[in-house]
Amino acid sequence: MRSAFFAIRNRLDRAGILLSGLCAVHCVLGVVLVGALGLGGEVLLSPAIHRVGLALALVVGLVSLGFGVLRHGRVMPLLLGGLGLSLMAAAIMVGHGLPEAVLTVIGVSLVAYAHIRNLHTAC
Image (cartoon, rainbow, N blue to C red; front, side, top):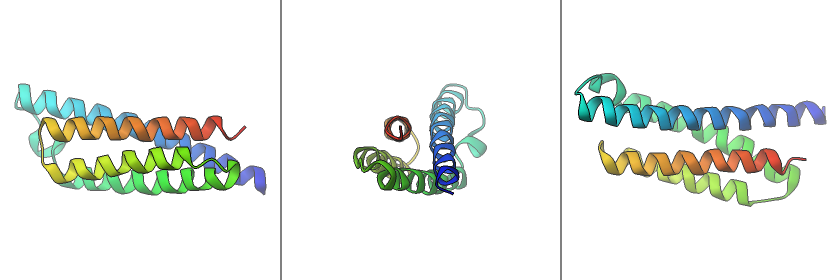
């Protein structure tokens, strides 16, 4: 049972890394396609996409990083992930543009790094 629990947590960490990368790509493509070319604004800048993405990141991040603390006792991945999630939430509040992109990319980078640290401390 215990190994199944940790396998699920490891999968969640990997999913968190993947989601972080997809979020960063979405953000950069959104800025380039909408800002430079004027394409895809309704889809790429939709508030619903950002809210759903943040909700997924919160669930995956808090569950996997929280379980990581229970497993290995290290709080740093959870703190880094929490900071990254906070920056992602702040990005939603500042509106579209460069500040949103910067906050989002920094936030998802911290979340991805937290998941990587969580995977490495699981050994």
